[in-house]
Image 1 (cartoon, rainbow, N blue to C red):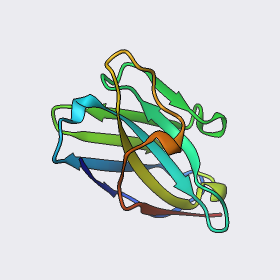
Image 2 (spheres, one colour):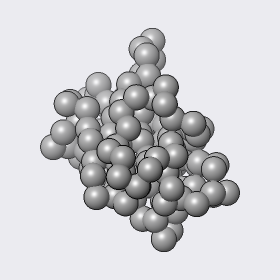
Image 3 (tube, helix red, strand yellow):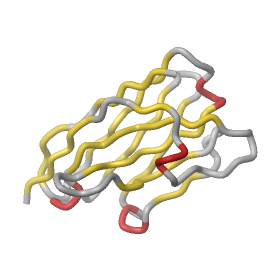
Length: 126
């Protein structure tokens, strides 16, 4: 499966932004989806993940209550709604896909993902 992330940009603190991840070349509903980010000089970190059906989600603690991950299997899209953005949210955001069994929970471990998008830059100014 190929992934294309988009929606990044320059915003001010407390603004909102929605990232999109378009999938092609596979059966999208077979994959759990995740968002990760990497800030300058830092390691890549988990942001959010969603199960195959979209019924289960998981978030990094610092994103809970601010970010919402979702998916539309018919459109082969995953989304990350980011609210109340902070300067420390500045990073390149990547979407990723992992083949999962239907009952599997969202995957938080980036090393277990098989497919990655190219990343989209989010810059939050103070």
